[in-house]
Each structure stands twice: as C-alpha cells, then as structure tokens.
Image 1 (tube, one colour):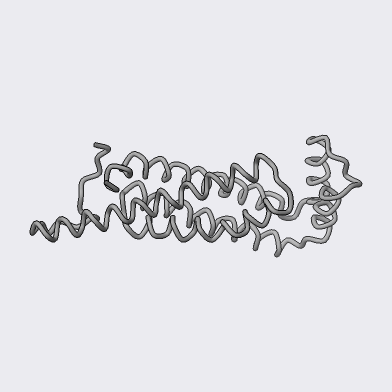
Image 2 (tube, helix red, strand yellow; image 1 turned 60 degrees about the vertical axis):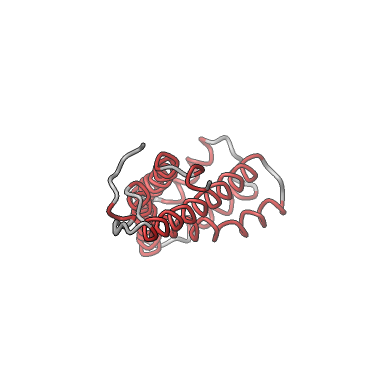
Length: 175
C-alpha cells in the first residue's frame, strides 16, 4: 500500500524544491557578499524605498539600523552561513534525486525542525504565506516519512525473497 503512495517522481519533485531553495539562498549569499566594503545602509535604504516601504517605521527601520552597524566581518560570516545552508539544501536535493535513504531521512528531520517555529509564527498572526509555508512543509515531511517507510518495506520484502540488491544500487528510473 505505502509503495504506491510514494514514487521516484514525487521524491524528485521534493528534490527540485530543495534545489530551488538552495539556489535562492546561494544567490542571496552572493548578494550579501557583494555588499562587503560598500555602504550597506544605503543599499538597504534603496531597497526599502524600492519596495515602497516607509524607512522611518517598524521593520524597515530595524533593517536599516542593523545595516548601519554591520561590519565587513559580519557580512562575510552571513555569506558563509548562506553558502553552508545552500550546500546542505543542494546535497539533500542530490541525494533525493538519486534516491538515497540518507537524503530521505535528512528531508524528514530538517523539515520537521521548522514546524514548531512555523506554528509559533502562525500563532502570532495568521497570513496566507505563513499558513502555506506550514502546509507545504508538513506535506513534504509526511510524504518523505511515507517514502522512508515504503523503502523499508521494499528492503524487507527483498530480503524475504532473497534479493541482495540495496536501495542505493537500484537504477534511477521514473517508472
């Protein structure tokens, strides 16, 4: 039953989603890195104005003040953190694409870590973006948990029938 719920195509959709997240964070890391030795506060102020936000109020003001007090070392560290996060997401995407069990575990654990924070944010104030983020994340976590269980059942069935082929040696097909 569970084997019919999960498919290599579904796991590859999750892999593409994770790769997209990694690519976006990688681009953001390069964007942050491009701000080293530049007027970061001026860049943030221009961005705030471009987005038609009031630079004297609330969150935009916090970002502008933060940019004023950020050193080049802190920018390098932020870029390094972005690159590390992107590397994790891209490694996860690679592993999922190639149907590696470790990547399925990583997807479940790394997705589940965010759920309490997403629920907390939703409790502070409901928005379509927050609700969608939570639903997509929970959906991916549940799907990957089902994929793990299905692969465990396939492995147990192959042992019972005497097959010695492991999950990591199966061909990469979408059928």
